Length: 339
Image (tube, rainbow, N blue to C red; front, side, top):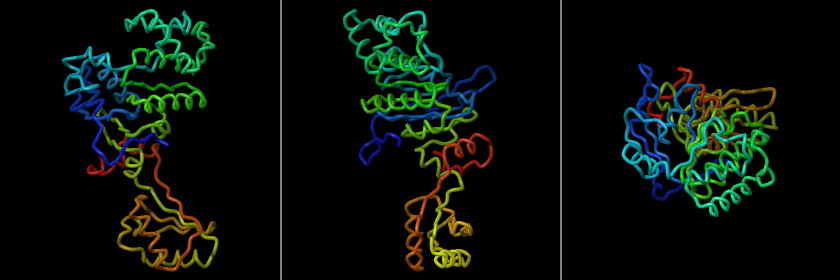
């Protein structure tokens, strides 16, 4: 399940804040005034089709390229006036590994320590600690060219952590990894966030965003099509329903008759469109957005009608449905639902 730090108290400070971020290359607008607020100590995932501008956003926020317009703050520092302070606060792992395959894993780590102007003693201590943390101690003396894809990715992130950044940009960090290596990377990300690190993640894997992210934004045609928690985004897309399964045919027939007669309560908004009997399996399907209010109404309706279902399950659209709806130009959610 996604790591959650949301609560009823005051909002945590923003680790990344962008208002009106714009970037164009010639007559091609890549980012068209996007707004982002990423709380400290959280995972934020930016989704979008190839060419949507995800990597451009990462490059701008990590000071690699400049924006055309926008108020941008990273780690509390103004990107335009104090980029050096931003660089000191962040770490970046790009789509392509920064590992030098001609030298050993340990030498890669020590090279990063030198770039951060650490003393020889401190650099060796930090390198050893991180190599151990990422389970690379046994391979530390071997050329990085001999590492597997998962090992190289772990070394890449270990190198990023040499400077103890509080904000990390991970641009498609698990692309090309096998399922076990991907899950290992997910655990590493969770551990980083549990230490208070903020993670800005771009990914092509929607299940990855669903598993890891506190908040998700979908970028399409240079604009944020929608953003929110995974559950909030799923509720933007039609197709959610509650499924009632019965073992008693008479109870099933009573429920199906009630649905055909339209006796569902007014509170059930979308469900009042009627349910769908699935006769072979003694199952009824009732349209629902899956909210607590609607579920309570369905349960109250069953109780008042004296109907007992053996099983009630809630089915909501997944992030694949959300992604395709928001980036295909069809089935766009209503404007008031897009946050």
